[in-house]
Amino acid sequence: MSVVAIDGPSGVGKSSTAKETARRLGYSYLDTGAMYRAMAWLCLNRGVTDPVDVLEQVRGVDLEISTDPDEFFVSVDGIDVSEEIREPEVSENVQTVSAVVDAREELIDMQRTIIAAAPEGIVVEGRDITTVVAPDAEVRILMTARDEVRVARRAKELHGNADAEALAATQSQVTGRDAKDSATTSFLEASEGVYTLDTSDIDFDQVVETVLKLVKDSQ
Ligand code: C5P
Picture 1: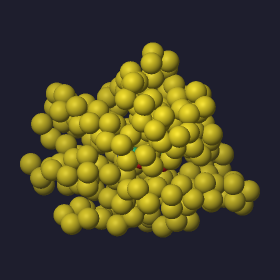
Picture 2: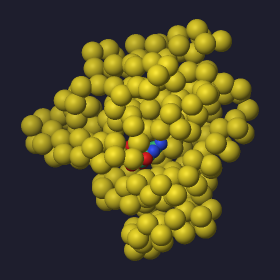
Picture 3: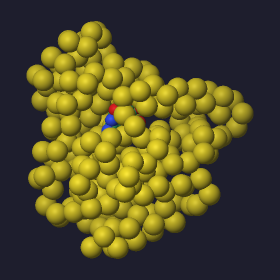
């Protein structure tokens, strides 16, 4: 069983790259950010903000997430929140969960269980996959891109274009979240043995081809 670990900041293109790589290899796919988002949705919904209460929510939850790159769903306590977790309110509040070290430990345990159960191989994306969740992964990649490139990509995703208004609306969202996230996870620089894939000046197909080559070379 082979694990491909992909970390990187927001807007760098991790999800589309990880999913396409999983499809092309016939592997499973795990979006760990969706797990933090689902828990953030639950905490928002229940008005929970205190770290001790957040931990209690994470410990008691029935969290399910699909590992099929073509069919995404995530649910908490039987509620399908696949769409709700993408709402700006969730993005803005996700650190209520991701900054709680003990809550992370719980989610990391769940992630390792899912990884171990993958039948062929699995592509896992997040912020701490190459360093904490799966430091022994066969392939470890840190995806990067210049700030302005990431902001433009996220603006297109959220607003359908990257005009001045969309860029202004997206700027602080992207860089602000990264700044806060980097206080808990280290994904702005590659740790030893992790391949840095700068996607600023290459297109999507070239990114995927590079990942597939790294997988091939590791086999
Ligand atoms: O990847 P995505 O942007 O959906 O992740 C949402 C949030 O979940 C991140 O901003 C971060 O706070 C948290 N996260 C994390 N560790 C991961 C994946 C995501 O802390 N492995």
